[in-house]
Length: 352
Ligand SMILES: [Zn+2]
Ligand SMILES: [Zn+2]
Image (cartoon, rainbow, N blue to C red; front, side, top):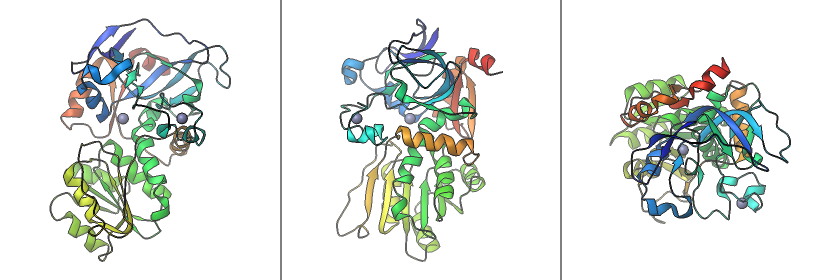
């Protein structure tokens, strides 16, 4: 099969002919219905070869995967060929520690590095993917697996950051989503579904702010030097109980921390490389600053179930797998409306 692979660190990925995978004991082969593109892919491509230690390229890219069970390895129970599944990408998790047993494999205590399909393991930018253990599969029922693909990271990451912030988000409080791209649109919807709070979207693009309103934001504000004052004004000076920074650069972090209310929480999910001092005397008392990365299998089940109920809408830019280079180019240029998903040609025929 033709897979889109990073052959060596810091080189342009390419299509390469590789053998179709087969499932060993406990493993499952999934026929890929959709494989999402993520900002993380650019980070992965930009890493030096030496960064990867034992998981060095070549490997197939793509960590947002959903599809259908194609082949079950010996000993796998609970799934049948043809079942629609989403793939929890926390493949380096041990399955036995406290976090894993709590369904938070993304925070596995024994992971030594961030690894996932497409991040050290062969990922989903291919017709088939080998999933190393059946515990990484979440059944999605009637949900279209193309829709489920971006839920496994863009959806799951925002959901997890918001769910863990629920104790500080009280009804009538204000939440702020900075960056209304693929992640931000999910975040707005989860905040609307899970809280009684006002949702304020912040972005530099008028088109994205319009989308934010369509997806449920109460206020949509142009980013810039005045945005913190505008948020203060909307909240009568109280500030925001929760800020989700989907960008993660110095400017967005500074804005986010500056608008936190007492005991407010800023969760950073955008890996923009920014940082900020966090000062006992300057920040709002009780303020929390956290990072959040992806999510676990329990949360993924909740996300796909919400999507199946129609509570969460996807805005997808669909590309055939063969157009992967164009998809990444459009992503890089900021031309995507929502989340880009690659659809292997054979799977499109399979679904029809
Ligand atoms: Zn990602
Ligand atoms: Zn673990």
